[in-house]
Structure formats: structure tokens, C-alpha cells
Length: 153
Image 1 (cartoon, one colour):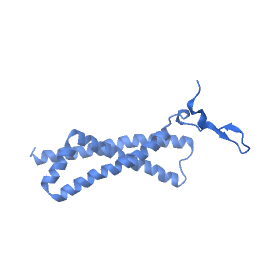
Image 2 (cartoon, rainbow, N blue to C red; image 1 turned 90 degrees about the vertical axis):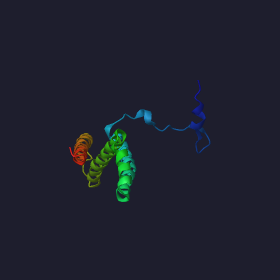
Image 3 (tube, rainbow, N blue to C red; image 1 turned 135 degrees about the vertical axis):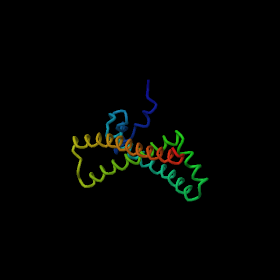
Image 4 (tube, rainbow, N blue to C red; image 1 turned 135 degrees about the horizontal axis):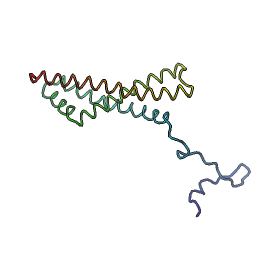
């Protein structure tokens, strides 16, 4: 069966002969590597940081607007979906910061050898998870402690 894309691979050489154009490699030939995943994750975390900052602005504006507006934001942020969004934003902020430090090291000319490059990628993932859990744990404990102090418990 003839491939319908064959016509797009045909060209003319400088002397007028018909020749087949070379095919560029496509995603199918690449193996998924940690560096590829971390590169994409760095870009996505930057986007998530930007979107999460809108939540921060909403919270700050509500705090400045008065108790009723602030209570509304606290309601949305305090429900399970809001807490999940906050966790995702925290994860994105931590990852973007840690990976950004790696990029600064690269800008200074360090960390380009393959063993160091791969090891640092694993360190970034582990550091992101550990730091995010620590930050979120401290935040939840302070939030829960503030809630119990507000109720007199």
C-alpha cells in the first residue's frame, strides 16, 4: 500500500532530477529520559507558579477588603479541592526554585557531565518532594493550630 505522504517527500535537485527528501527524526525515535521530563516539568511549573499567583492576589485583595471577603477566600482555599490546589502550587513553587538553582549552576558552567547531570536530576526530584511535604506539613499544622485557637480549643 502506497503511503499518501509520499508526494510531500519528493523534491527536485538543482539539475531538475526528482529526489526523495530526507525525513527528519520524530518523537518516536527518542527514549523518554529524566532530563526530558524535568525540562518539560520546569516549563509547566513556571506556568503553574504564574496561575497560582492569581490565587495569592485574590487572597491578598480579600484580606484588604474586609472579613467577609476574606472568609469567602478562606472557604474556597480551605476545602479539600482548595487544599489540593495549594499543594500543587507549593509543589510547583518548590520545584521551580530548586530546578532554577540547577539552571544557575549551569549558567556558571557546572554540572554538565552526564553522571552529575543525571544525579542532580534525581536530587531535584527528591528535594522537591521532601521540601514540599515539609512546607505543607508546617502550613497545615499552623492552620489547624490557628483554627483550634480561634474556637477556644
